[in-house]
Image (cartoon, rainbow, N blue to C red; front, side):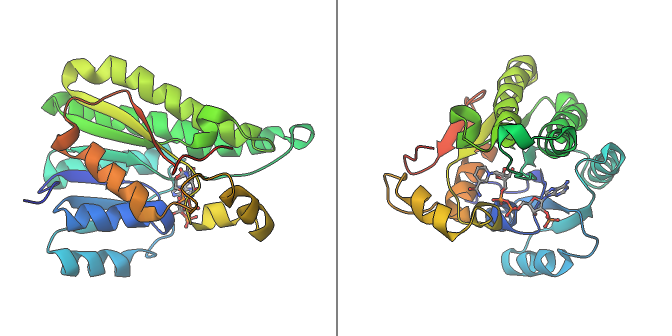
Length: 248
Ligand SMILES: NC(=O)c1ccc[n+]([C@@H]2O[C@H](COP(=O)([O-])OP(=O)(O)OC[C@H]3O[C@@H](n4cnc5c(N)ncnc54)[C@H](OP(=O)(O)O)[C@@H]3O)[C@@H](O)[C@H]2O)c1
């Protein structure tokens, strides 16, 4: 029995990294996946590949998550084609580092638009479908730095802390309609985003992980499968660390 058989899922930020792996694992578990990317055509090939490999639907939906109208069109397309939405994964995110003295208002706006405001908008849109059907699972990508804070990453840490608070507040408000809202707080996962900190910092950070290795995108995608599936049907408002016991 596949864990997500016929569940209709929207995953944002799937052109690479954690989002790309979530699409693969969801398709493998039988989900109907609407995979978001911002560059038109960029995931046509991979979507077709997973469709053929796992015999389910993987439909690319192109929009920038900071564009509310684009997100609305995608939700309307899902409503028209499927009549429901079972799972939303707010994965798209950016990391921009800056020491406190150098933080600009442009940087704050850019990071909060991509990492926070888009998450609220998509929860609002998803709730319209999930509220009517009285079920759903929303999974937000927070971060270990959103819980612990990280030097040189005040804005990114704040945005991911906001995602954790959004998760808890939405879980409280939406539980009445059987909509679960949880977050995953990854530690250091081997993706472009993490590698952007540079080799020297990577070596230093590795020493901070008690399990002695970076996380893989599969480690995170498996947690997303669990939270999307009915195995977690009584779990909501939780921030699930996937970090191999890391400290920052
Ligand atoms: N890797 C880690 O160690 C780590 C740790 C904690 C939390 N996280 C969180 O996990 C999530 C995924 O991270 P990752 O490591 O997989 O990052 P990544 O490799 O940089 O991939 C980020 C993805 O998000 C997409 N994206 C960014 N801004 C977007 C926008 N405005 N609209 C649509 N898509 C957008 C990117 O698309 P493009 O290809 O178009 O840029 C890309 O597909 C993020 O929310 C990140 O903050 C990651």
